[in-house]
Image (cartoon, rainbow, N blue to C red; front, side):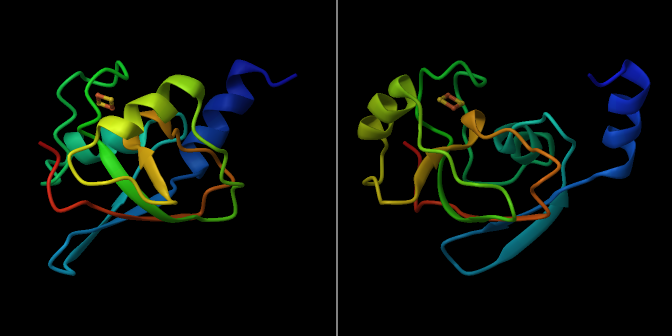
Length: 121
Ligand code: FES
């Protein structure tokens, strides 16, 4: 069992990087914190193309992304509600579609790369 001190030490030593690629091919790479969602990293830094109207409540599908890689972490399939919400995205769903508010950074993720859809609304 991890103590609070060991958890804090892991947070301070591990900073996964997320690269956001826009439809114009421009990319931005940001550091996130363990436990933070990809959506939070994007909105905290004002990444255009992530609207996140519901603030991560899994109710808007305006945080749609295409996952290119989650680094060394296994890619888990979307949960049941996320799976339903992915049918409501402005740009059609693809095999690697996810909602950015539902992917939380872990220490297994070294380098995450996601592509942003053409639009969210
Ligand atoms: S922010 Fe609304 S579903 Fe992700």
